[in-house]
Image (tube, rainbow, N blue to C red; front, top):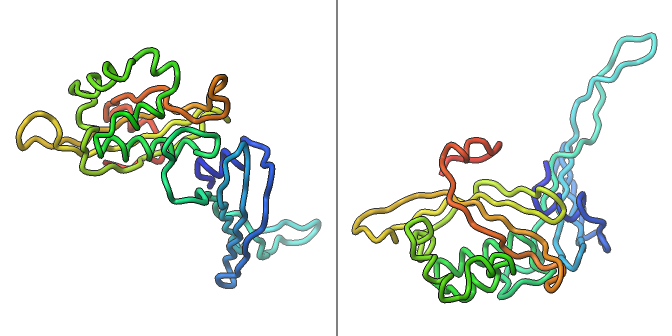
Length: 221
């Protein structure tokens, strides 16, 4: 019912600002309401969809009857800007961080990928030269210059922890004519000092098809 961004901004956070933008009755059975929401420096447009549904209501000493009530259909959110961030900041949500890294990986821009790595990630995989060499090993090489990707699942685990499953298709395997479709798990967390409030990647893991099937709501890649 709620996507990851709406869950983070409206449920797991206390919004600092909520401003109505528009409301429209699409048809007699559906209405759509849009709000500008800000929380922890992140700004997004939230879309709330309501549906008019038949509901069976019981009555004291009489037969139940059917009445129309408005029920929540979905709540989704999207960033106010379509531009991908060039560096981490509280304004860049975890969904944008993953997109920015995938965009950089496709362009083989290792420095920009490194920019979004969390301090603990950099300590484990750095310096940059080592990180660049790590991206050449078989399990990560397909991420570089990949042909396309598909988001399978986005999950807010806690207010400060986010996971995203991504299917990546690539022919950058080192084997001529060999193309692969692999699934990776992005682990992104909101940081403490010295990068307070910044969403940064703690790690990226290649996972198996069996692991993917344990995530409800995922689609085949």
